[in-house]
Image 1 (tube, rainbow, N blue to C red):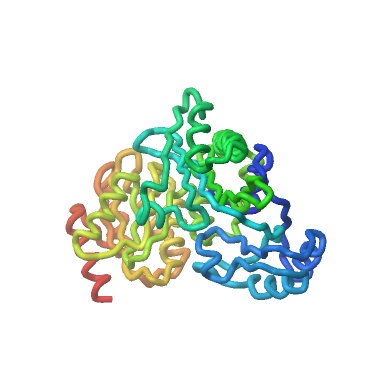
Image 2: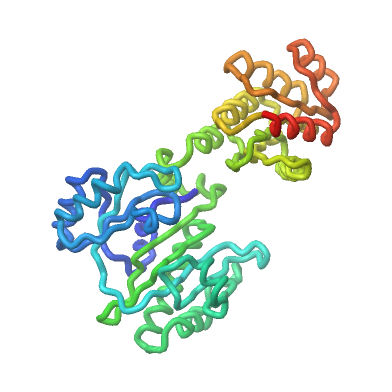
Length: 378
């Protein structure tokens, strides 16, 4: 789960990180009032779950409350990477001496959290990795012991030479790791961590992603979810307990099991097609999940063909077949459906589909190749 910058800063403040004050506005009037309260010179920042806000014009410096209002009028309602801005963060403008990057993320190869720090902050860390990889220090953290003092000190000295800044940065590393671990984050990032002319460190930007699996144990964090800021298909998939990821192709995939779903997408690419999504209905034998899956897929106008690939183990093929038939009764599906069913109750499933006017395949290669050919012609 991604959360907004202002929410991430709330988690950072709870961990003791030096975060400047800030408030959220949903109207230009609120933005102007908040700017007055914060001293007039502020930054107006779009709150959306995507990067590239600055490049899109979603981050503006205002030298007065009136200018903050003007910027809020322009930013609110703006579309950034397909997401509409409904909130802006009003925070004091800071004088900056230098910028650094500090982040913690899950490194699956090392099976641990890993710090990434760089004295080249304020830009995409991916760009730094490509142009100047020596400017990045990576420090894995053993989950049994947490961040050790010498590791925090090492990162601090990589960023700064001034003993005062090293002391502050060492503390920041521990505080960021506390925020990361206590909230079950998959990513916690400060970009940039700035040095002010007075020699103080401040985290003026924050980005946090939370592991969805931890949310039932973290109700306060789960409450941060903003369904208005995420695509409707993702909201519907989560509510239906479906694993769904939107992609850019035109072959809508509905599969049971993550491994088979990945293999199906690979096969779509092998035969020259492009998958429109990853969608795993799981091992459940609930026909309603199939209906929900088809509603999500058919809502995507780029989908030219729907591909079912079901291997019945725990999942019963006849329940999937019933779900497909039921979905065609509930919603008007104009998109052609190609189906492969094999495994548990396969014979019953094929009979159900035949009675409803569908044909089905048992060969995975055959159904994928046929579906891809149709999508190409469409």
